[in-house]
Length: 110
Image (tube, rainbow, N blue to C red; front, side):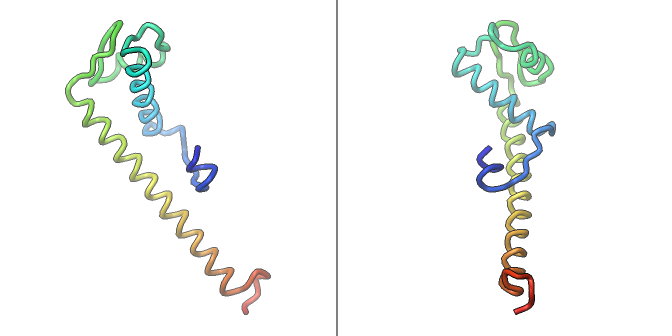
């Protein structure tokens, strides 16, 4: 939300990548706040666990080999996407500043 509201970046929260980042965050919260117990987990999150090649468990989350690499790769891709968006935003701001400096606030060439 900070990147959208304060920085002005547009973030598409409907992508598979963004969804996976949220799933990783939900897993972290389940481990920290529920001791990894799936008892109170939503059905949607249970499906995520059941469909993951790196997670298993009926009552308790079991993290399997490869999950940390998966998390690191997911966040790497997300940060690359953010970096592209930041660069594009900075370029637009630079172009806007150049136009304002070249033409003044009234849009006429000074």
